[in-house]
Every structure is written in C-alpha cells, then in structure tokens.
Image (tube, rainbow, N blue to C red):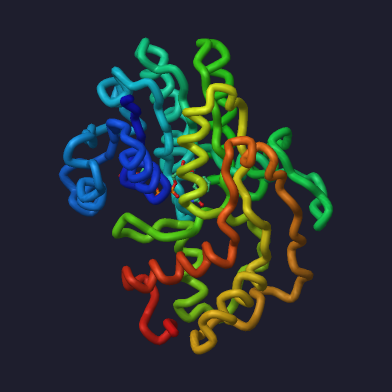
Amino acid sequence: KTVCVTGASGYIASWLVKLLLTRGYTVKASVRDPKDPKKTDHLLKLDGAKERLHLFKANLLEDGSFDAAVDGCEGVFHTASPFYHNVTDPQAELIDPAVKGTLNVLGSCSKASSVKRVVVTSSMAAVGYNRRPRTPDVVVDETWFTDPDLSKETKSWYVLSKTLAEEAAWKFTKEKGLDMVTINPAMVIGPLLQPTLNTSAEAIANLLNGSQTYPNSSFGWVNVKDVANAHIQAFEIPSANGRYCLVERVAHFSEIVEILSKHYPSSHLPQKCVDDKPFVPIYQVSKEKFKSLGLDYIPLEQSLLETVESLKEKNFIGGSSSN
Ligand code: NDP
C-alpha cells in the first residue's frame, strides 16, 4: 500500500515514516527542501527507505504543491504545520500555513481518487483551550473545543492556528465527502530521530540546560511512538472516526522536575516555579478513544527518560546536566 506523509522531516512525522516503512508501506514523503541533508538524511537511512521511500518537494503555502505526493496514495497523513512560539507575524508564520496549508493538502486529496482516508495531525491545543474549569476530577474528551476568542485574547497564536486549521478541515471534508480522522496529541516527548531540536522536546531540554525556574503550567504528555502508532491505526482500522485525544497523563512542570530529579540527581534542575501563584491545576483526559485503536500508552516516566537520553545523545543538553 502507498501512503503520503506531509512534513516528513518533522519530529512526529519522522517516527510515522519509520513505523510505516517497518509495516511494509511505500511512503511518499513531502519535505520543504529535499536537498537539505538535515531534513532528509535521517529519513533516507531508515530501514526500507531505499526501496520504499520517495521524497517530494512541497510547501503548504503553494497551491497544488502536494498533488504529486498525494496522487496514487490510499492514505494521507497530514502532519506539516509550523510549531513554534516566537513569531513576529502570527498570521503569515503560523495561521496561514496551518489553515491554508491544511486546505491545500485536503484539496489535493479530494482530487486524487486513490485517497480513502486522511489522517490530520491536529492537537490538544484545538480541544481544551477554553474557559471550562479544570480540576483533578474534570475529564477532557473529544467533545471539547477550544475557544478561538480566548486564544486571540491571550495571543496564543499556535493554539489559534491549530484550532482554525482543524475547524476548516472538518468543514472542507464534510463538504467534499472526504473521510478524515484527526489525532489530537498534547505535548509530545520521547526519542528524536531528526537532528534538530523541535519545540516540545525543547521544553524538557530547557529544564536541563540551566533554567532557574520551571513554568507554572500543567500539560498533557504523550510519547511520540504512541502518537505515530495512533496515526497508523486510525488509518488502518475502518471504523476509526472523528477525533482522538492523546494524553498519557497531565502533569505540572513541578512533577516533571520531580521525576527528572529522581533519575538525574546530579543535574541542575530548576527548584523554583516562575511565579508565586498557585500551581495551574491538573485534570484528566479520556483514554477511551485511544484505547479503541488497540494501543496502550507508554508511561510518562519512561517517556521522560527516553527524551533525556535522546537529548544527551544528540548533545542538546550539556554534559554537566547528565548523570
Ligand atoms: P516539527 O517542527 O518537528 O515539524 C513540523 C513540520 O512542519 C516540519 O516538517 C516542517 O517542515 C513542516 N512545515 C512547517 N511549515 C511548513 C510549510 N510552510 N510548508 C511545508 N512544511 C512546513 O514539529 P512536530 O513534529 O512536533 O509537529 C508535527 C505536527 O504535530 C504539527 O501539525 C503540530 O502542530 C502537531 N502537534 C505537535 C505536538 C508536539 O508536542 N510536538 C503536539 C500536538 C500537535 P521543515 O522541516 O521544512 O521546517
């Protein structure tokens, strides 16, 4: 079977390509710059790549850019979307590539008669960023939606980009009768395959790289291998549908530091929270839909250890912080 992965050089997508190749798929992988070895070398070295990986050049903001990559594919995994926080022009840097890019990819899918299902990498950012109260008993699930007005008010542009992109995707696929499933992970951690540091792994690297304080935030956390496998199961299982929240556990950064301190006692981890306010409360995220894909979560503690070991190996954290 042939499938397409957009944004193949990214953190999540690299794992997706690896696991698809392992399962015997032929993968048409889109990258922005196929000539940049930093974006492609690690993909070309994967088992099965020589025989079954094909690179295509495509940009989210160029109309029709994905036609060639999508053509002839039964499944399309749309992961490409900018994920960073320091932006000067949120519309141009985050929102346009997320929203127009998603519609661009879905447009290619609706033209290709081979496409049976599209799996879009959305985010918990499109699920839970609203004013509904959070306590340890509250269970967030796939029926929740982010409030775009709140993300505008708080200038949470990445959150807004993912929310608007998912909204536009549901509207488009309903109109065109395209079968779409979305995967909505929270903070993704675990081993890095790509040689560059992505935003979510950076949150852990920062803690080990001399930060004096940790953020007063509680996030859901999930292992990148679980995220990649969920994408594949969502394509392979005919009855898979709708959205899939992916969170193994919600934890405040104080808990992340506590777990890391246990395993890396000689590292210089921050001992203080960035502010004196009460800790942002934790909450639950329903695991039912994820489990219906026949998967089980890798525990947060293991995911953290895998992340740190990988960050050390790739020299993203200094020698003094390693144990
Ligand atoms: P990465 O930054 O590693 O990957 C992002 C990918 O998007 C890269 O391949 C990048 O290409 C591509 N991209 C960005 N802009 C464009 C563009 N204009 N045209 C073509 N490609 C573009 O991030 P992740 O792997 O973490 O994220 C992948 C997806 O998962 C995104 O949709 C993100 O929103 C989502 N997600 C991530 C989470 C996380 O915690 N990591 C959590 C929830 C969702 P290039 O390499 O050329 O820059």
